[in-house]
Amino acid sequence: MTKVQYLFSTPDGNIPAPETILTKHIKQGKTLASDLTLKTYFDVLKQVILENWTKISLQSSDFTGDIKKLFIICEKCGLFYHVARARIITQDSEEVSLAVITAFDESSRNTLKRDHEILGHLWKARKLKMVPRPFFITDALPVTGRQDLAVTVSIMEWLNDYHEWHFTRTAGQVPSFYIVTWQPGRGIVRLPEGFSEQLFELISRILAYYFDPVHLFQICLWSNPAGDFVVSWNNTGGLSARLTTIRRYAKITGQTDNFDSNENLLTALLYLFLDTVLNIRLDRLDGTGRYFLAGHEFLLPTISGFFQGLSALFIETAIPREVMGQYVSLLKALSYQDLRILYRPLMDFYRNEKRQETGFLENSLPLHCSQLASVLADMNFHDGTVPQVYLAA
Image 1 (cartoon, rainbow, N blue to C red):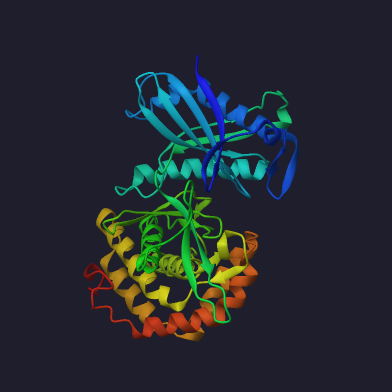
Image 2: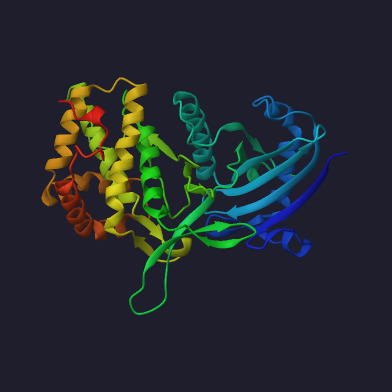
């Protein structure tokens, strides 16, 4: 018989779930679910994993044997999804960790299904693996059997030693800002010196790399405040980032049937850039505090990473070289006024998608556009910041 234990992840490590806590109603969005307790939540995850282990294990050669022990660890109760980790020990003494993502309301469930499908597509479509591999998704009923309480559960690769990150601030009249990570068992850990700019470079690289130059799709509505990107580093100075979720993968704005394919591609790449360099600066202090716009010093590493991602994409796909030459020239020439005008349809897109940070981003645009225009004007695109593959006309 499989041994099962329910745990909570805390800054001091994983602790057994007390019965007094398990009877509490689970958070569903911004409210408490009236008919679902934490015990019900854990039970449905156990049910999904045990009943579907054969299907799940067929997805990877790393999973062998039946489950001997199952530890379900509640990691995060988020606004859209709840994240748990399934630590599995098999009869063959193999140890496997899986991410178990659960959505409750209809909108979040549909988003999770789309997220799972897009992750699977991008995992197969690109050589570099900078998103988690999805294994299995299903709709499930809690043990109550009530149809109106159905949930959606997605099971995917657990990114070991990757952690959520956010900006925080020092105390005092002239505060400074720096990045910290949330690490179970260690609490809040500051990102090592010199890694913050590199983190921005890696994030923008991922976003550019996963652009689809054929259908003009890009990763949309990603969010640093929601912890969509996670980070890992080692003692030898290596830093790595991964994207954990993709809520939308689509054309963002600006493409019409009135342009030829190269003009549409140029427009799509322009809005991919504008979306990336603005949204990458957005965070909430300490993950839940006020909105925060990261300093202008992060713009240059963001642009550098963006072109690294496009360079890798260029090698794998058929982006016309002449388009990239035009693209570099266009970015270089963008003025403050140009940027203010170009950002208008992007703000319309955010409003139409009911993005809650839209007001803050709009208020930040004058400063952001001024700083971005200055950085672009000063950039030497021939100094190695932009891969040379793009500099041919």
